[in-house]
Length: 47
Length: 232
Figure 1: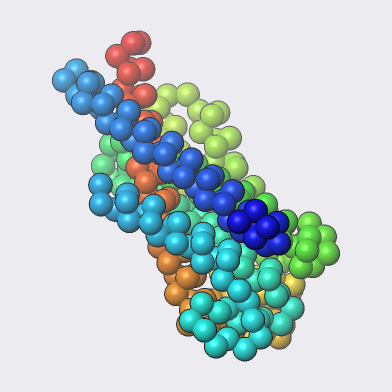
Figure 2: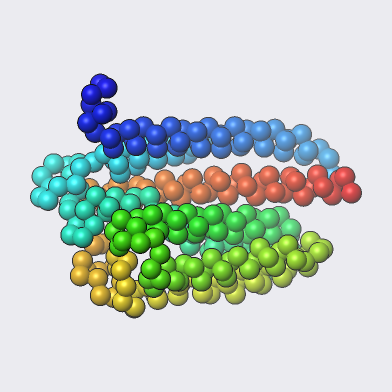
C-alpha cells in the first residue's frame, strides 16, 4: 500500500483533494443546518 | 436533502475520475482519456478549471436576473440574492483566473502573458470589482440596492463578449482561440465520450455546489439584515 502511493504520487493528490472536498461539504452542511435553526427562531419576530 | 447527497457522490466521482483516469494515445478501455497534442496531462484541468468559469457566468446571470426582479418588485430579499450571486461570481472568477494562471505556467511557460482570454477575464474582474466598490460607497439600503441593480444589469452586458466572443475571435494561446490547431470551441476539442461525460458531470456537480453556496449565502444575508433592523 505504502509502496503504491510512493510510486503513484497522483493518488496522494487525489486523497488530499477528497479530504478538502469532504471538509467543504461538511462545513456547508453544518452551516446550512445552523442557518435553518436561526431562521425558525427569528421567524416569529416581525420585521 | 436528496440533492445534497447526490452532490457529494457526484463531486467525489468527478474528483476520482478527473484525477486518476489515465491519458493514453489510443483509448481502448472505457476509462481512458485521449491524448490531446500540446496539452497531455495538463488537459485534466478542464474538469476543474472550466466549471469555475462556467459558474462565473451563471452567477453573474443570476445576479442580473435578481437585479431585474428587485427593480420591478422592490423587495430587498431580491437584492440580497443578487448581491450573494455577484459575490460568488467574483470568487469563482478569481478561482478561474488563478487556476488558469497556474496551468499557464506549465502549458505556456509563464503565469501571465496577456493572452486574449486572460485580458478579458481581467477586464471582467475590474468591472465586477467596481460593483462592490459602488455598494460600499452608498448609504441607505434602498438607494444602494437600486444603484447596484442597475449597475449589475449593465455589467452583465459585457459578460458574453468577454467570456464567449472576444477570446474566440482573437488569436491566442488558450484552447479554443481563433488560431487553435486543435480545432473548434473548447468543449468539443478532441474529447472522447468518456471525457465528455466526466466533463458534463463536473459541470453539473459544480452547478449544484454553486446553488447550495448561493442558497446558504443569501439566507444568511437576509437573516443578518433583519437582525440588524431589529437592533437599530
